[in-house]
Every structure is written in C-alpha cells, then in structure tokens.
Image (cartoon, rainbow, N blue to C red; front, top):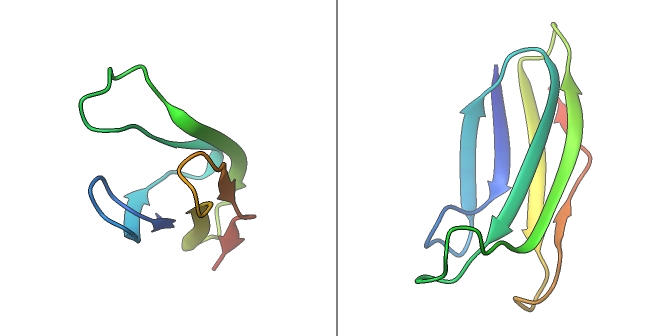
Length: 81
C-alpha cells in the first residue's frame, strides 16, 4: 500500500512523496531545518497519528507549511482510497 504525501522533498518548494506502509497504526511527522543546522534542529515540527485498514489501497495525506517559515505545518485528515 502506498501513502502519498503532498508537501515537498528536501530542496523542493513542493511536491509529492510516496512511501509504502503496512496496515495498522502509524504516526507521520514533519519538520524542516535550514542547511547547515544540526540534525537535531527541527523547526515547525508537527505529527499526526492515523490507521490504515486492510482494504485500503492508498492513503493520501496533505501537509502544508504556512506562508512564513515560522508558521506551523498543517497535516490534513488522511483520506483512504
């Protein structure tokens, strides 16, 4: 099963990332950091728990950062397809 996250990859202004997950409970977390910062520096960190049932073929999760870098991430309710 694939989980599709609309947001961005490192260095991108936006995009889609697909990951494979097994049925069951999961937690997704997002953050960003500026190049050169220590790995532990996590700005605007957010997370959300969700469950994937056996019949789901795809789960789509939209993740957006507010207009300013100091804004929080918004993780929408996961949609099962």
